[in-house]
Image (cartoon, rainbow, N blue to C red):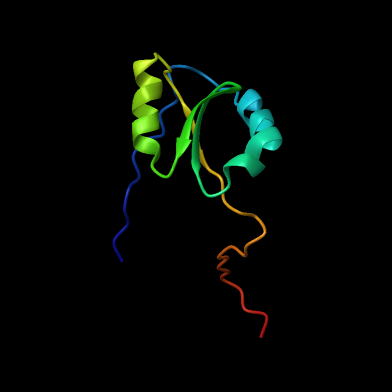
Amino acid sequence: MATQTLPPVRKSPLGKIDFSREREWLKRHRAEYIGQWVVLDGDRLIGHGSDPRPIVAQARAEGVKIPFIRFIRDESEPSLYLSAYDDN
Protein backbone atom coordinates (compact mmCIF):
# COMPACT_ATOMS: atom_id res chain seq x y z
CA MET A 1 0.00 0.00 0.00
CA ALA A 2 1.45 3.37 -1.00
CA THR A 3 1.50 6.17 1.51
CA GLN A 4 1.01 9.75 0.57
CA THR A 5 2.73 12.65 2.27
CA LEU A 6 0.56 15.67 2.88
CA PRO A 7 1.92 19.16 2.31
CA PRO A 8 2.93 21.12 5.42
CA VAL A 9 0.25 23.29 7.00
CA ARG A 10 1.03 26.97 6.67
CA LYS A 11 -0.24 29.58 9.09
CA SER A 12 -1.93 32.64 7.71
CA PRO A 13 0.32 35.69 7.61
CA LEU A 14 -2.68 37.60 8.96
CA GLY A 15 -2.73 35.55 12.17
CA LYS A 16 -5.94 34.39 13.81
CA ILE A 17 -9.01 35.84 12.13
CA ASP A 18 -11.98 36.82 14.29
CA PHE A 19 -15.31 36.20 12.54
CA SER A 20 -17.48 36.94 15.59
CA ARG A 21 -19.13 39.99 13.97
CA GLU A 22 -19.98 37.92 10.90
CA ARG A 23 -21.48 35.14 13.05
CA GLU A 24 -23.60 37.68 14.94
CA TRP A 25 -24.81 39.16 11.65
CA LEU A 26 -25.79 35.67 10.47
CA LYS A 27 -27.78 35.05 13.67
CA ARG A 28 -29.75 38.27 13.14
CA HIS A 29 -30.28 38.12 9.36
CA ARG A 30 -30.04 34.52 8.14
CA ALA A 31 -33.81 34.14 7.65
CA GLU A 32 -33.76 36.99 5.11
CA TYR A 33 -31.25 35.22 2.84
CA ILE A 34 -32.19 31.52 2.87
CA GLY A 35 -31.09 29.81 -0.33
CA GLN A 36 -28.55 32.52 -1.17
CA TRP A 37 -24.86 33.21 -0.78
CA VAL A 38 -23.94 36.15 1.42
CA VAL A 39 -20.61 37.94 1.44
CA LEU A 40 -19.76 39.96 4.54
CA ASP A 41 -17.02 42.22 5.78
CA GLY A 42 -17.46 42.27 9.54
CA ASP A 43 -21.11 43.10 10.13
CA ARG A 44 -21.47 44.78 6.72
CA LEU A 45 -23.31 42.93 3.96
CA ILE A 46 -21.38 43.38 0.74
CA GLY A 47 -23.86 41.44 -1.34
CA HIS A 48 -26.00 38.32 -1.76
CA GLY A 49 -27.22 36.12 -4.57
CA SER A 50 -27.11 32.74 -6.25
CA ASP A 51 -23.44 33.04 -7.30
CA PRO A 52 -20.86 34.29 -4.79
CA ARG A 53 -18.09 34.93 -7.34
CA PRO A 54 -19.17 38.39 -8.56
CA ILE A 55 -19.85 39.45 -4.96
CA VAL A 56 -16.40 38.29 -3.85
CA ALA A 57 -14.92 40.21 -6.80
CA GLN A 58 -16.84 43.29 -5.64
CA ALA A 59 -15.56 42.81 -2.08
CA ARG A 60 -11.97 42.57 -3.30
CA ALA A 61 -12.45 45.65 -5.47
CA GLU A 62 -13.57 47.46 -2.31
CA GLY A 63 -10.33 46.40 -0.59
CA VAL A 64 -11.68 43.57 1.57
CA LYS A 65 -8.76 41.17 2.08
CA ILE A 66 -10.69 38.22 3.54
CA PRO A 67 -14.41 38.34 2.76
CA PHE A 68 -16.67 36.05 4.79
CA ILE A 69 -18.62 33.87 2.34
CA ARG A 70 -21.49 31.66 3.42
CA PHE A 71 -24.38 29.81 1.76
CA ILE A 72 -27.52 30.16 3.87
CA ARG A 73 -29.32 26.86 3.67
CA ASP A 74 -32.84 26.22 4.87
CA GLU A 75 -32.30 24.44 8.16
CA SER A 76 -35.89 23.18 8.18
CA GLU A 77 -35.01 20.87 5.28
CA PRO A 78 -33.15 17.66 6.05
CA SER A 79 -29.47 17.67 5.26
CA LEU A 80 -27.49 14.78 3.88
CA TYR A 81 -25.60 13.11 6.71
CA LEU A 82 -23.47 10.09 6.03
CA SER A 83 -22.09 7.98 8.81
CA ALA A 84 -19.50 5.23 8.82
CA TYR A 85 -21.57 3.46 11.46
CA ASP A 86 -24.71 1.51 10.80
CA ASP A 87 -27.25 1.01 13.58
CA ASN A 88 -28.43 -2.31 12.12
